Image (cartoon, rainbow, N blue to C red):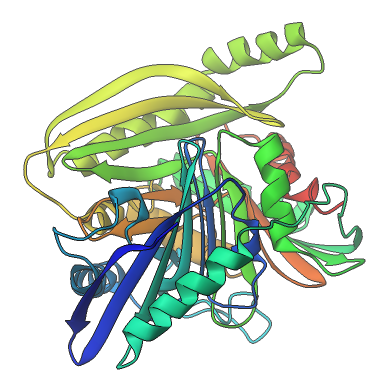
Length: 446
């Protein structure tokens, strides 16, 4: 198939060129297995994307990282495409990446997040997008020879994508030693201190997380895990991000932070949890118990109300849906959909800045909750529970919350999971809930 006409323009003194074409049937797996870094994988029920190689990169640190990335991303993507471009909207270039949970530096030399900045996004050299049964290849290059390199990339990757490797669904590395932070005794102590703050009125809710470091019996292939997660968690946001060097962050999160298309915003409150039953009857009983749980409803309503309050300064209207149960393979959650219509045009990263962290992963009031998290957790959250996703030249985009996730490098993986602590929380019950939330990642390693 002949390439579509691409785009060419400049960012400062740098020429940026994109090219694209339609592809035949296949998967996005080849791109994720390439040696090119950075790499990004993204999959939802309606769209799959694989991106590799940095034609241009954007990084930022500190509390202004959202604003700094927004400004740099807008300038870069505006230069890459024009209203008369030949690429359909689904195939046009996007920036992919994410943010750290906190705005400070990573802790310690042994942190798995050493190579992850406070924010990192890239314009990929190679981007394969699959939607509605159709696949598109988009290439990008920057510099004086950008037109030739963009064309060469397009030709090379059309050939490489003609044949896809088979997925070995049984290739799991196995787990040896495990290291928990904190121990169960330490967890009881941490939750006890948080409950004291709740009782004294300093906190309404705080989300405390745990880290589980596992040593693997063989090297881990994250593209293998990414492919297998589609079978067990097809309705989740599945992601993987490999920076220029170091580890890979990946997961299958049920929680969308925000999607923006035009002036329509979609998000959700996801808080309050229980397990799955061994039989359909037990499953229904657990779901009914969750819907009637005073503690879980209180935790959930705190999240829903806070998200509404965070959106209202931008919105002409905010609509709150009915509270339902979201069923996943190992856990059930209370879920409420939230939709807003913006009063003016906004960039998706402005909304990400306003919403992160939601009380579902941080707490209330936000400042006191973040202080408590920093003082209580002995490990570095890094990108765990932070926004991961994409943005396009129109300022539209989708970001998920990086939970049900792990950061891994060959023979080591660090898994993260958390629980919301409110009045009446029981430390042992919250411990059991966290163990359920580890299962999506553990099942792909054991």
